[in-house]
Image 1 (tube, rainbow, N blue to C red):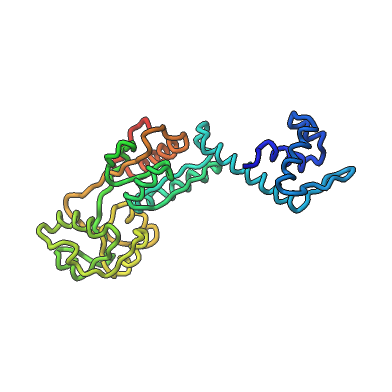
Image 2 (cartoon, rainbow, N blue to C red):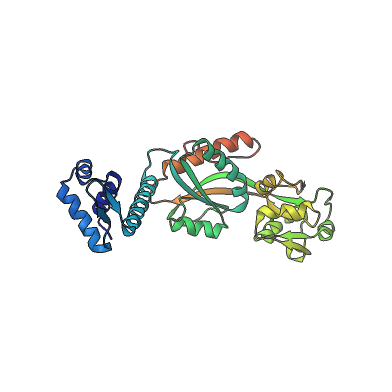
Length: 303
């Protein structure tokens, strides 16, 4: 690895064009600056054309100056990630299942517009991938639908989300035969969700596996299209359906007693959350409490 002080001396010299001024700015002797440049030229060849009143970069010197800028940017990114002084500066990374992700992503964009220095990196993924990503430090925050029992993770209850039977706008569901007639639009967790919910509405039913499947998508954010077009019904968490209704109308069929999942924030237990991550959680809590009075936001007030 190239000595960072050599690079700093070279970049400053390229900026000022003078060995004396460079040495004064860096608090070095002119001889030290010259030595740093010689070390770099031993590695990369001629970097400077020395003229009486100016210095000119060779092609190798120009390439090295670009590299100096890249190193400086990488240093700034690292400092931003490690700094915990300002909740509105730097990057916060979170990974969530599709339904809650569809619900909170516009809120995260609102937060980023309020604080342009904040960069939000968000990924949609199933529970298993969320757990792996947080455990391997690829994301600081995650949301899962089942509380993990891994002691390396801290899990905090966030919000409750019911499952819903979502049908085309002009349909009605009164019996299991109606579901068979309409047909099922499946997704990655569709049959498991359907079995949990439909067992309440239609006790003793043969199960979602026996429903005619009219379609499938692994993107929960796209399921509104076939349902709104009358191609079938589906079972999804409420937040997914609410996100759809911004673009396409669908209908929720009554299913009796609700089937409700608790969603959990997770992060590594060994170190505290950054100020940015804590700020994101607080912001989402405030937005959800304001927007969803009928839903239960479980996040403790101190977070």
